[in-house]
Length: 156
Length: 126
Image (cartoon, each protein chain N blue to C red):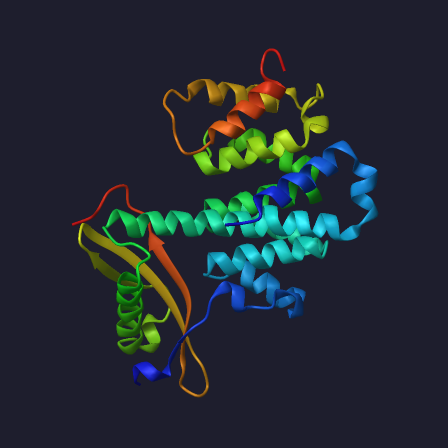
């Protein structure tokens, strides 16, 4: 085997639109997290039932990394609202900062859902976690924090 | 970089004028593509790049060639048992970076590098 027999294939070389749902499912559960994220988003774009199913699996089993799990949060919210809200309550206090940033963005983009009495406990959990942020960090970003507090803070 | 302004515009339209947003079915698909695919893949690649920077390497031609050379060396030394998440280490001026690469051997013998993971470090590992 020589170096001339070695090739490098990257995420953006794959035409996801041409792939079947079964292949996309296998890619979502595969090793390459760029490919997994792209495959999951492709299923969501097709409005496939597999998208929500896999997003739930990723979040419940903490598969992949923060970025794949963040994609799963949005996709599960779109496909299975009640399961998604349960997971937000479960994970709000302990999820990693990037995922927390994604949750805050999701809430900002869906104020109609999160301004209701039924979802107030989720807002309260988010505010409690924000209160614990004592020093500047990359995530959640300043911009997201400010937007969130403007909408859901005491005066929001 | 992912198209941040386009994402903001789609999100604004969806929140403020849902009827208009829904008139074009491509809007939802594009929003999902940017929000759930392009954005998170971009942020992941940024984190990987930070890991490279932490060991004193950059996106210079010389450093990229050094990383490719490292991967070619790894590819040459593979066995059937070590195709998945093959561990290796890249040395930079300020430390070492752990790498996991996954490979596939095609029928014609070509070795495809399908996955690279740089394991982020808080500081440089020496």
